Image (cartoon, rainbow, N blue to C red):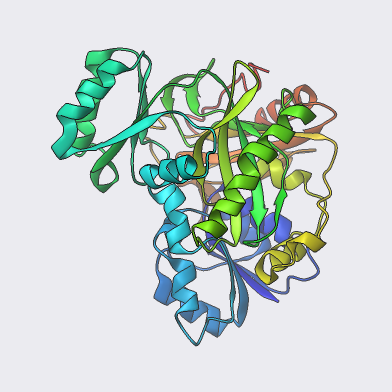
Length: 424
């Protein structure tokens, strides 16, 4: 069948790389795609949130499945758009419907869901412009550091962690009163700080059944030693060495199972990926930091390469409600990815820098993210430019391969973290 992937990042290039390997995929389209997807699929210059243009493409190219990469189209209701249109309602859409996508679209909605289903998470309260004074009072009841989260989508940058009470109050005002994150921060969730080590758990569901993919850990801060500003992610490793079978069992019993049954109890129609951001606190207990309603980036670049199954078969089973009939096969090797970013990212950076050396990469996979083809050359088009993924017998070996290949690559002001995996 013909398949369309929505999105343009490293996650979507990884989806395309995996789907293109399947004999069940006839023609593969990516909207809008990047320089990496251009090599293995047909890029179509349509925004992932332009639903009318997506519909035209689906009808014109006889597309039978749409795999949604990023969160914005899901939160805006792309799945519902298909279901409500007789011309395209037969098309399989991989991604939850709008009401379920609120789990990522609203931090408050997610916290209420967690509390309702007794899923372990940090204590919290939420505030608006009108209750900003109450927010100050609530901050005074907490011990530092203080965690402030913009309620809506803020491109991975809406979470601020501060150690000083006055700074936290000023930040709350900046978010609520000065609309620092625009619409996204008309409401702000303040949480107790959880101390521990983070990891990501990825679950596939058809709404009834679920399968758990390998765990991964990503590195959000721009600077070595996890310092500096938050980014969309600077690298990832899979599996996570500290995730023992006992710990994974706790995640499944205390978090995954009640999450999937919570979807059914709350009538949240969910066919797609559930990304659960977790933290392992002192006594080896997992707690939920956040839900995302799609795969993570750059975690996809280490999780999907470890999946041995035909990915299209899995996607079909998710769509048909037969996920229980699939058994997930995982490559025993570790996978790691290192993200190359534009100089200045996550703040202002320049685009259009030529990337050289991609053809010299050996024994690693270059997943393109913020990169496009212009006049026959690959040039930078975003902050996170390329993810270099490698396999190894352990994560140290895999990381070493990625760094060796990075030395062959070049673009002006190229930046990357040299310490991925340092804390493991």
